Image 1: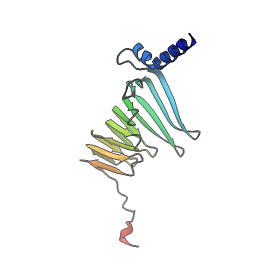
Image 2: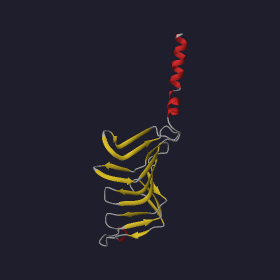
Image 3: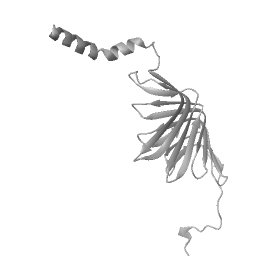
Image 4: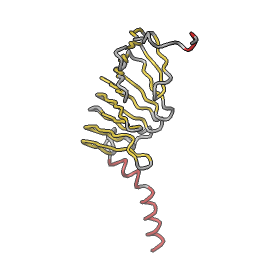
Length: 181
């Protein structure tokens, strides 16, 4: 009798996740968060703060993701400086590390540069940002760049833009090192 009870217990325990899946409606998230305020830390220091009115967690799906249907605000902190990203909609895919920000995407860097786009992708694993949609970057000195699409690393030291135009402000008092003394 004890052997039968033990086998039954382990058989039921192995199917617990399957039973949980059956209790969910098709397409329903496994969890819903309201007024979300998440802090990400590294070595005890806050490196990011994510705020969202609604978080839908679909980690129960084979290709899991988190959806922010009412938008997101993310604050990044590095060396005492703050950068922000906001959008009206966001989705993050767990396996690929891709974050898809849509509608009224605004990225403001700590030095005052502002990127505006209708869609922006962030590849967290490769630390790369890109879009295939029109964008505008307004720099802190007032210059700007309008383009059709771009690829860049997270700190924008590598920036590849396609079909762009804009206005650049050049300091004529600055000397070119190749001009000599």
